[in-house]
Amino acid sequence: MVDRKKKSLLSWILEFIRPHKFYFVASLIFAFASVISGFLPYFFIGNIISQLLAGNQDWNFYLGMSLWIGLCWLGYWGFHALSTALSHKATFAILAEMRYHLTEKMAKLPLGEVLNQSSGSYKNIIVERVDATETTLAHLIPEFTSNLLGPLVVLIAMLMIDWRLTLLSLLTIPIAILAYANMMRKSQGDFENTVEKTKVLNDTAVEYINGIEVIKVFGKEKFSYDKFVQAAKAGADCFIDWMRKCQLEMALLTAVLPANLLFLLPTGGFFYLRGWISANNLILLIILSLSLLTPLILVASYMDDLRKIASTFGQIISILEKADLQRPEYLQEEIEDSSLVMEEVSFGYQEDEEVLHQLSLEIRPGEVTALVGPSGSGKSTIAKLLASFWDVDKGAIYLGGVNVKQIPLDYYSQHIAYVTQDNYLFDESIMENIRLGKPQASDEEVIEIARKCGCYDFIMQLEKGFDTLVGPAGGRLSGGERQRIAIARAMLKDAPIIILDEATAYTDPENEAKIQASLARLVQGKTLIVIAHRLSTIVTADQIAVIKDGQLEACGKHQELLASCPLYHAMWQAHIAVKDGESNLEGGLAHA
Image 1 (cartoon, one colour):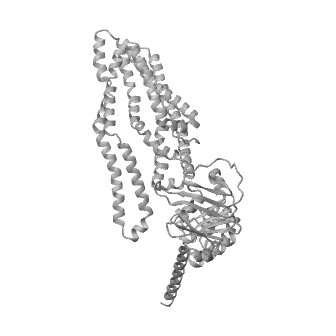
Image 2 (cartoon, helix red, strand yellow):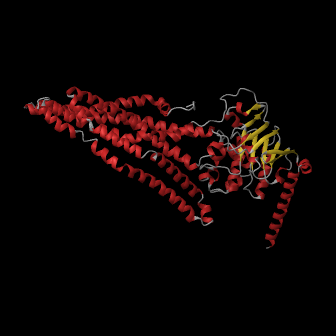
């Protein structure tokens, strides 16, 4: 699964199958054996009827024929069970591999590619779309193929008996094909419409559930529920409309396809009366034509699934074909230190919207660099680019003198610990969430880093301490508690470069002071990049980069910027005014 170039649908399906081809080949062989075992009894039945008409009264002959029919019946179900077991064993392994490759692929994509689709859409693809491939892989490949080959063998036998009556018995097939073709013409695009409407329903459901708190607080239950109901109704209506279009043709298809005796019986009787065919051969033809019904109807039932293959696999393949972050597999140049240099970097989340414009910035190893500026100026974008969540559009970023595009992604990620104001916690224990920073860490190491990060006390106050489950996305903890767990996780990683993007935004002033003190001890000797709106927290930084409209406005120490940069001076004055206002408000509330 390494070649992600554009390939045909068949090439992708063969790639999925290739590691499990033994199981599919064996499944196909057993499926073919099952179909043949299902056909053989019709030959024996024809022989029995012929002998009865001939007056044969040998009981042993009929007993022998019956035993053979019984053995074939057992063979039919036995071979079918083996075929199904083998195809499903391979298929479920492939479904697991598909999901693994999808999640692995998402980890290698630029973050922007991932964020362009909603979580509901990804859930739909990784769960429903992958599940939908089960029919193709487990049933279409062995059963559809064998049920085409089996009737072909019987058809050859029928043609050898009488080709004229055989062709007459097949006249219902062209009629059924015409009905099916017209049904496909009328409903062209309907399946894709159902896929799209289902995707919208998934997205709306996820949005409704995730936003239920805001919906209740602002009294928007009716508006939001109506939106969900409309999406659900559209999702149902598209299926109903599709089925209505196909009713007449589907009825014709199911009525005509099995009616292959319609032309065979009268014409066969005419041929028998004229002496053009013997009674034995006519009876055998009638019985064999009936044996064609089950496999042909089964093949017809799979035609709709066959038509859906492109849509079923399409969304899965669309993710797998996205361009990865361009990184080599092995490190080819030695990284000198933990410095980061941005050299005339330009970048935009959308092709026509550039956020950073030829920005150059040097972040020296072992120093604290603060990024400040108005909201929307590009500070968090710089942090995400430094963390290699995206590739730059123009310019370059260097780690220790080496272009990050020449550094393996896994190796680079080991050098970066990234903490944002919106940190995700998995529905695991606090112990395991912190341990994610260093999977091989012992319990004692996790507990020790929690102490150093100032979150040990609040953890121990929880009912189960470090074994407390945090809930989906950490929902059982407060925002400040989640943030402190995320900081502990990042500190446990012990990366030489730490990026803190508003990492203390959800903490109260008292805990923020504790966290700042803890961080000051933990980041000594490391390269630290801090984004903070509270300028008082970064006045001691080795350098402060002032960002405005995606460009570097100024860079220097706090006192230098106060004297030389009007924007920084204005931001500092606004910050001081806010702090004074907060103090006055607290004092007023205290005396209220």
